[in-house]
Amino acid sequence: MASTTESMSSKSEMNPVRAIRTFPSFPIALVVVGKEEKNVITVSLVHTFSFHPPLLGIGISPCRYSHELLHRSPDFTVNLPCKELVEETLFCGEKSGKEVDKLEETGLTAVPGTRVGTPTLKECPVSFECRKVQNFDTGDHTWFIGEIIAAHVADGYDRERALIYWAGEFRTIGELIRGR
Image (cartoon, rainbow, N blue to C red; front, side, top):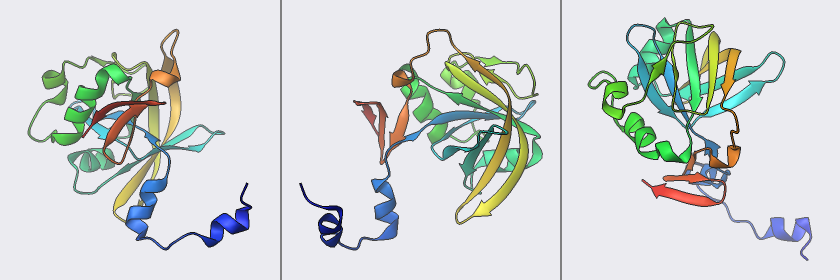
């Protein structure tokens, strides 16, 4: 077995933009923003920022319609789709809410939030209701940080069915679902 220092010496330099794709897969989320002008955006930059208090962050490019809505809205929901929602997830990431009603087009069902004005998605087995507490710009994205004030998890939820995404592939743990 090679030692750590031996394997380190065989590394070659790589373009940082390409090298970042060596990260393991990220979860993917369907984020809903807006009480009146509801929009659903597919987000692959989603991460836990704190456990106490429970904070989630979502990274959104300023060129996205949802970026504008997130600046205006006091809250948002983060909904984790399962593999059966891969086509809806792809659609919500490719279409702009300025041009199409994504809920109507995909058949996803908006359910009123229990603690926030923004709805969750009935079809997603996990939903987090978040009150926006901070946002900051980092490179080509703005991170919107939300405190989780309500969480909903379907009975019997199996996180191995959760949809993840990276480098153009939708997956679950161990299974390729669809290439882009």
